[in-house]
Image (cartoon, rainbow, N blue to C red; front, side):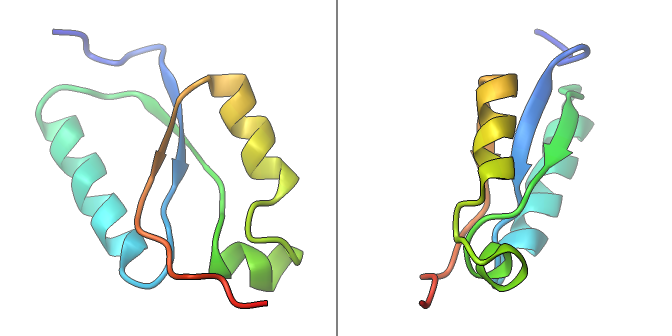
Length: 79
């Protein structure tokens, strides 16, 4: 089994209950021995409120760079 060391994963924690779920899942993966580096970026309502876009360029750039992303639940972004 791979440990994930040296692997960077884009983490979009989500919004609503998403961040709580993301923390729990990441902790579970790490407890099982999978320990990648997490590059956290925002998307959804939180991103819309802070950047004006539900899918900001920073999130797209991170996913393009890491080539792998993991996303927690997102609420429907209001416009």
